[in-house]
Image (cartoon, rainbow over all chains, first blue to last red; front, side):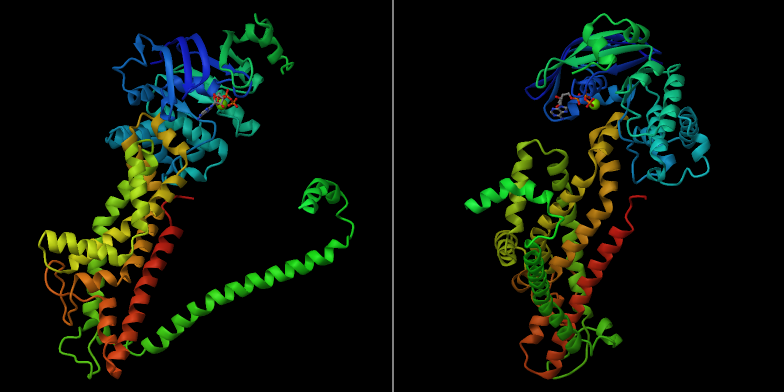
Amino acid sequence: MAKRIDVKDLNVYYGNFKAVEDVSMTVEPRSVTAFIGPSGCGKSTFLRTLNRMHEVIPGGRVEGSVMLDEEDLYSAKVDPVSVRRTVGMVFQRPNPFPTMSIFDNVAAGLRLNGVKNRKVVTETVEKSLRGANLWNEVKDRLDKPGAGLSGGQQQRLCIARAIAVQPEVMLMDEPCSALDPISTLAIEDLIVSLKDEFTIVIVTHNMQQAARVSDRTAFFNLAATGKPGRLIEIDDTATIFSNPVQKATEDYISGRFG
Amino acid sequence: MSALDTGHQTGPLQRASSLAPSQGLAGRAARNTVATVVVVLAFVIAVIPLVWIILTVLQKGAALLPDASWWLNSQRGITPRIAGGGAYHAIIGTILQALATAVIAVPIGIFAAILLVEYSAGRLARVVSFTVDILSGLPSIVAALFIYAFWITTLGFSRSGFAVSLALVLLMIPVVVRSTEEMLKLVPNELREASFALGVPKWKTIVRIVLPTAFSGIVTGVLLGLARIMGETAPLLILVGYSQSINTNLFSGNMAALPLMINNDRQQALEPAVERVWAAALTLVLLVLVLNIAGRLIARFSSVKK
Ligand SMILES: Nc1ncnc2c1ncn2[C@@H]1O[C@H](COP(=O)(O)OP(=O)(O)OP(=O)(O)O)[C@@H](O)[C@H]1O
Ligand SMILES: [Mg+2]
């Protein structure tokens, strides 16, 4: 479990528009890495290249390489579908499947990937819901619709759904931006506890959140609108927030941006 | 023109003081009243014929319907001079033809809609969309003539209920495609992405996530499409002969259908036949109504859990 991500010279395109340019970075296993940066600098775009979700968008393509341990995700032999089984994702807005109960939502990844054994499914669902700190709140209503939960509960349901397929890496794109402070704290605690098992990458606009949960922080920026976003620097979170190398990082963090 | 231009420029300024009573207020209220009256009038004019039709059909057709023999018997051995008999042969004919149509048109329509929404990038999708556009404007008599030329003249089959169904397929496909397409577009992209992110292949995402989410809407569309084709008469006139007896074999022999029964009895100027015309018309309206209501009920109790 938990793999190292090694990105080399990555360019990301939407059709002819180059959205992200020349990113190289390493993400250590069992760590939390936060991506910060102004809106439109390509954090989501870059994040989605790490599980090949970028190419789902018509015209989306990538140059460069992303290594997951020893395997190049973008080599011709690799099936994007299996990449996404290894690298899970949680989205900005909670998106439980509306036709499914709480139980079925968490079981969806297993069942849709062909796991039929009832006992395995039931055990995994409970374990995942416990892992997502949601078990106690929903254990008496597992057959109720997932869409009937509160926003924060729905987001934890989506996290449970993502960890149920036992990925090695978990990508989270602003997972708390639609949530209140209490739910946010619940998810932050969850992220910290999940890093025992997963490699986690989280995009956030909340500096305190980056400081609270992450071990490493990457700052992205773009020179001007219409220009591609770039990785400005990546370092230990403490260093980025106290003593960054680049002036742009310091300006952004201290709010002197733009 | 210039009045409009300046009006546009000074708009914000006027708005700033518009809380104070201005002389424009009375004029605006009058215009509002006029507009309201026009809209209500248009609505009433549109509704009058509808209510009129329904009342006429009810009044003239209701007499025979309470009788069980109307629903259980055919017109076998009944002449225009004699009252009695039923519409069972026509009802069963209409239902069987509609079912055969649905069995062919629904899968084709749903696959086409999936192609258009989920795999929309390709050239094939553009061709399909264009074809569906043309089909949806196709007059039913042209569809019937085409099936006659293709199925009967070229392939050598004889006229039958199934030939009618084939023509109805051409008319039903565009309805199913367009309604399914709308329903698939309503499925949020986030659900597809959530499924992809679990490592679920695209086709499985469509079958297990997208279609179930859109299910009730698709069923509603199918039922509305069925309601639409059940009253089609041209294919019946061209592609099958009327039978007064029960024939449940779609593939051979004359076969009744409600529009055919109406058309047949309409040609007789005798009272018992005319009564049956209206009763059959009411039966057809009721059948369509039931499908419409079923469609809406399914939409109401949709598969999306709230
Ligand atoms: N589907 C798309 N098609 C074309 N261009 C896109 C698409 N999605 C994003 N972009 C462009 O790519 C660039 C990066 O967008 P991205 O969403 O990655 O930014 P972000 O850093 O995640 O911003 P935010 O903090 O607001 O979420 C932007 O210029 C955006 O306009
Ligand atoms: Mg984003």
